[in-house]
Amino acid sequence: MQEHNIPITYAYISDAHDAHPNGPAFGPGQAGYVAALKAYDNAFATFFTRLAKDGINQSNTLFIFTVDEGDHFVGGAPSPANCDGVTVPCTYSQIGELDTNLTGLLATEQGITTPFTVHSDSAPTVYITGNPARDNQTVTRPFEQGVAALTANNRITGNKDDLTLALADPVEMELLHMITADPARTPTFTLLGSPDYFFFTGAPNCNSPCVAEEPGFAWNHGDATAQIAQTWIGMVGPGVLNLGLDGGVWSDHTDLRPTILELAGLQDDYSHQGRVIVESLQPSALPQSLHAHHETLLDLGAVYKQINAPFGQLGHDTLMISTKALESSSPSDATYSDLENKITSWTQERNALASQMESLLENAEFNGAAIDEKQAKSLIDQGNALLNEVSTTLAGL
Image 1 (cartoon, rainbow, N blue to C red):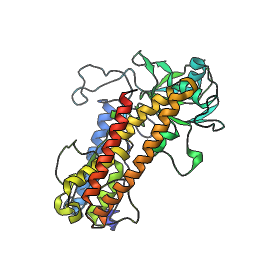
Image 2: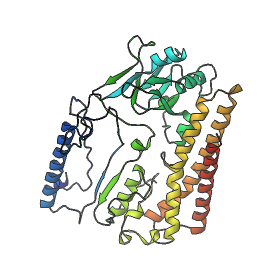
Image 3: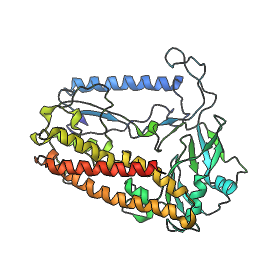
Image 4: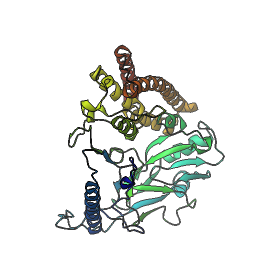
């Protein structure tokens, strides 16, 4: 595509930790994994060499590499103990996600046989049949409380695991930007499970084991753990600073498009829910409007991400509060109602702040209008106040 003068191209590259197309899954340091990584290295070398012969290189082309999600390896300890995958290959006697029959566990552990479907995952979305209201105290709430109490014996470690890391119903999902324009797609709630486990619906019993190791898949994703949520981006090209490995800039995928457009001198006809990653760009690549009030602009962008990004501080803290709400069983469900009302209020406050922040950032990035420093500082203070209020609420639970 580049050789045929298509200036912007995208590619998705499959993972290296599975033997494509039919498996099995590899563990870290396993011979098949190492061989796949070597093959990828060779393929990238061929790719860049060919581009260079065409006159396409980092002096005139922007290259961005990232991952769509992090993965959590599910398996036992490698053997031998000193294996490193380089000089000593690793092998695994236990490898594979723990496939978990959510229907069977609910029936046998909690006596819950309410029909439901799931979008199977380590963080499945759950749809209770009949779509009862989120605060229904005879169907929805007992179901959520039952899920929160589920445990299983880990087939790899032998430990008894709590299966629920976090729970979010449509109230928290709205804050996390998980609600679409189609009401039929909104689940009753989302279960963010222990990352060793992959949840599905099955028989309402455990006559066949409700938890079984599946060697065909050994890398789970989708949960809110640091290992899965913290990923990386690599950039090189005109206007990009050579920073090496830098963990000091908080960003997420929504920032990539405005950053690409800024560097390419292009502009969308809609606003973004991301920002230009100015910390990673050369000053000469930025318009004057991104130099003016520079420190305030950086602070504004940082607070904006923490209140608006799903994995920002606000998203993390409210998810923990949501979990407390959904697993609670106080009289008249008072704890649930109180915490859900708080999340609703915080979402409304966040939306109002984020909208104003986006307007300032977009105008500075693409319309040549420097930020109003007084307004920006006020928004920064309001954003930090919101973060502090939510953090204090969480600490008191």
